[in-house]
Image (tube, rainbow, N blue to C red):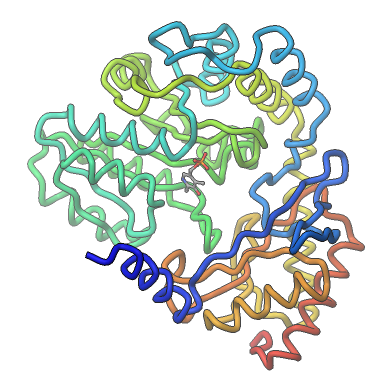
Length: 403
Ligand SMILES: *Cc1c(COP(=O)(O)O)cnc(C)c1O
């Protein structure tokens, strides 16, 4: 085996398809988000970031940073172990209590990321529930797919948001067989919502548990930012709510919130929980401060929605092909991998605007797009510069205008 030739051929395959990923090396500027400094070929250039998932700019919030510093001074850098072996710090416990309260659940369980939360919780539930069958939305995130796969439970995929198809699959199972319905509240690439109430109706009718990924909903929807399930008044009907501390909350970490018996089971059997070191206490303290600020500041959510609506409106006004999205996510269609990459290169090099191209396999071929995430820290002037730059790039690359 010529290992070097093999690995090079794998990389070349991506390059020939225009799918090879190049990272922009940035230093985000605290206090000046969405401004960042880009490092390229030994030089620096100022950029405006338009594709961050720090949806509310909480990564630079003063309370969050104060909590971060204070806990680092108090407890040092790392947790010192897994949660089981010396790693459980009082800041983890306080954060879990805060998250349980946010979601109106008895308990919450912290993981090092939202990815690990999904992978561990789903693999544990799917393994432990006897003869479990898992019903999974076709557009579910890779972390859920991996968790389900690892559980080796029988899996059926229902067409995206298709309640009739989900019901058909549920009805085909014996009523007493354990079932888990796995879905999301906001699908991150199209920005559409999952029908949470209707899925809960089906779960009750067919004796299933519900597992909801609220990664793109927490902090952003509902009166206290508990997510779309809170907005829809169905939080108490969802059995397991999973979320991240890395997007709207601006830090890092993931969690599930559920009944105490479910959290305790995942705590006791989940391998990605048991065998991995705990988050640094300062991270937990910063995340906890962020949750508290976001819960008690509805104006953050109002401004976030206003910014998204304003940007969508502006894009339409400038006849840029913004895709219909009911949420805060603003996709703009390019429809071609190569030109999607060229458009974003041009935006970065010529206009100092950083937007990562979204290509296959993240989205289907032919729907390659720019995914814009306006936030309360993006002002009118930055929006104006964005649409001007997009218009210039659209003209240069002869891209399709809005219909
Ligand atoms: C980002 C993401 C995750 C993973 O969360 P991290 O905290 O970034 O690991 C899980 N689910 C969805 C839908 C995501 O977009």
